Image (cartoon, rainbow, N blue to C red; front, side, top):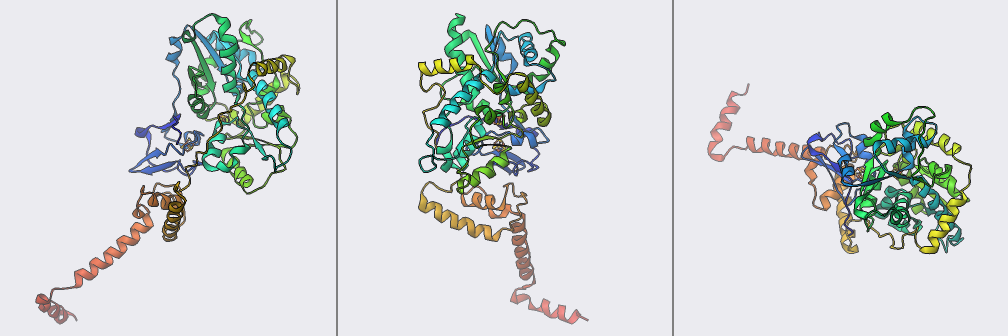
Length: 456
Ligand code: SF4
Ligand code: SF4
């Protein structure tokens, strides 16, 4: 089993054991025991749903703090396109200016890298075998790390459908390190590369990438207040000499659901957002549907990355803003600069935009790796489930009756964790106690006679 670090954690002292989060988790990764929640890390896909739902703010994302910026002489911001949707501005340049005012020495737009990623996806889709038999179809974007992880642990049969193209935040960091850093003439350890992220999953993905790419990830909601106060006044954007490769509309559009597939412009593409919708769609693909669809853009957050768990703005408002900004920033075409840079990077390394390491099957939802044992456990599970009320009340601390049955089979819970079973057993015990209480020892039979005499 691959060892991963995670970005979503529980602050136990804030948890009141309310069980609200256990039902929202798409992989049933949360349990509540002894009045506190805990996360089964091997199941967690860092989707952030539990951060959104917890009213006690007991779940949080582990990210970089602002003090870390001071450790570097030269600080580079890699802003996710969704950052642009958080502010009421007419052009992204103002937000980039605010990043400079905040203290970054350079801004390297992830939206620009998204345009190069668009070229890579177009090429992969184009070169993919045209029939499902040689396929497979539909191809599924691996741009959202939550979806990739969900496929790995819950729908491993769909791993071959995942397109092996790195997401834009990985590509942006790689390009900076390869193309820009050597020209800076500053030692690598003095340059701090900071991704500004809308979600915890991208932090996890960067942390587990296999080679260190960035020096930190700053949540959008951590920077928002400060950046908002640093936005330039109407029409007064200062010169921005170190914004490399200003992104066009296609790159900015990646922040919203439908933006990626709009950019890729593949025939017969589909865009889906929201983790439950994505899970339902994957279930249907597993059942053999949608072979006629060529490309699926699947994003875990509502309305796409603009709805990430670490953003600030309402996702619908944010999506509308992105649509406006993307419209302003160019028609449905990639610039010559993008196309030339894509070709150049590919010439240097044919796999620059793709991961050839393969995506491992991380299924943790099977009962046992040994098939015979798995079947035996499944029979036990069904037998236990038959005794449970199947109302999925969650009072036991497991999200469903089925998951409690599974926890019992795996030795992680007891039948009596179910309140109904506990009551049944107490009732049986009470009846036994009553019978025992009425049974007098033979030597005291006179007592029974006396009781009979006293009866009216
Ligand atoms: S981050 Fe998502 S997968 Fe992980 S525990 Fe929270 S809801 Fe479950
Ligand atoms: S949709 Fe975007 S913001 Fe949400 S989890 Fe996926 S990559 Fe992160």
